[in-house]
Image (cartoon, rainbow, N blue to C red; front, side, top):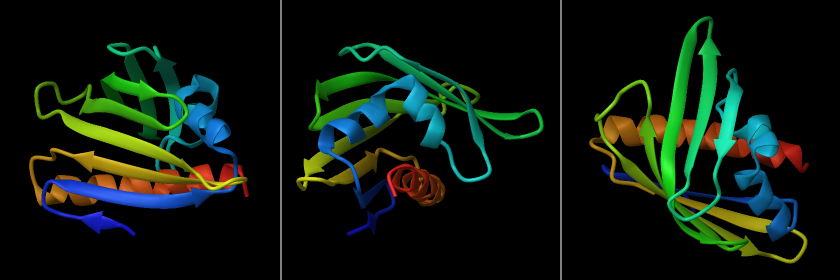
Length: 145
């Protein structure tokens, strides 16, 4: 069930792959590059230091000379069950920092992915991220269709 409030969103999707495979798609740069941007965009850079306190950087190209770069640090890593990490935009320093919790629930041959993205400054920001995550999840689902 997908839920949105003023300051958070929660989305879920069942992916046709094992829990470990989906966790790896979320944490390995070469796999992140295949799905971790909305439709119409491409990932140019995906850097991951998958350690608690380690940082990640995902640079998305959304148009000619238009970039959005998600950056943050891992707060919790419980492979292959759960990830918690901060989220901010490199192009908007000090605007806000939000928190993403991703839970990977094993369903045997498939995995339910639940994203809780919280601490948005306002409802519009939450709505924009909901659209972005929905598009990303569509692409992730398509990788394993």
